[in-house]
Image (cartoon, rainbow, N blue to C red; front, side, top):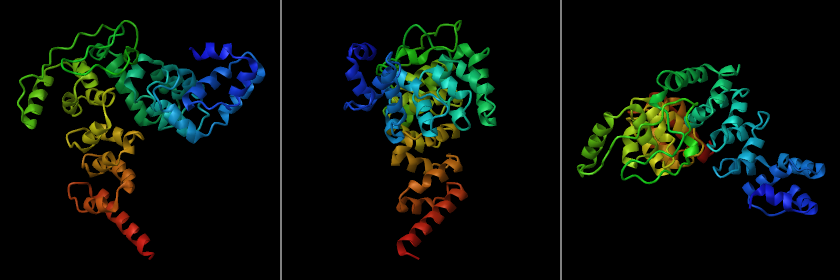
Length: 356
């Protein structure tokens, strides 16, 4: 039953109990109910519900706001620039947060959060007001302004039809690929008037050599002849083998599309973090994701990868085990600064254990 209809059908006494947060409901359901009650026609019910929402512990709120299943009404309710930074980051990182709510944040937030509002290219294309809001934000830094110019040049200018995704239906998955997990609404175009998507060309994976390296080269050859728009399509909805090739594509938007794939799994991110063929931007994005860096293997692979920007490696290395740090400090392939910091961290831990 629709939550609003359910709420309206409840007697006042029951709504008062719900508004106080006294019924045992899953966090997402409780938040959705409370947000609805915050608009209740009864002033007392509405005030109690708003009070309960404001007192909701941040540490309990964050997991709910990070879920794609979280109701849009909840995500919009908490999209207030005055909220704690952790709450705002969770909202921005959740692809389910409506574009209009993100645009409100993009207009006033400080760096680096304003820059993160541009990370989800699909949402920016569907809601170009995000781009407009970030552009007029006086707190936007040089990197954010550079990204804005890049998006405008690649998506909003003469080249925009190379990237446009059809608004009418979900794109057709490549032959042999699983059905896409993302809804078609996640892939709307930047604005009306964009040309409809040309169906992707045939990319059969049959008859490829069994040897892994030869197979990868054959897939790479077949992909290299495709236009950018079709590459982005396959990056989003292709097989794991296809994504492994496209994540190293020289076109940044093709490579970034792999990280936006609804089928990208944690084990795949771990593998990408170890690749020395991917660009620094991809490794920086993985290293900046709280979700992806929950995995020890991903963190380990990033720090060991000589292509990872040193700032990212040094921020993550404190999470490595001492044994892995010991191997890191002897690895001549990584930057000197990273090796030296690994050595320093090992000494600090050793001194702590010995009490000296």
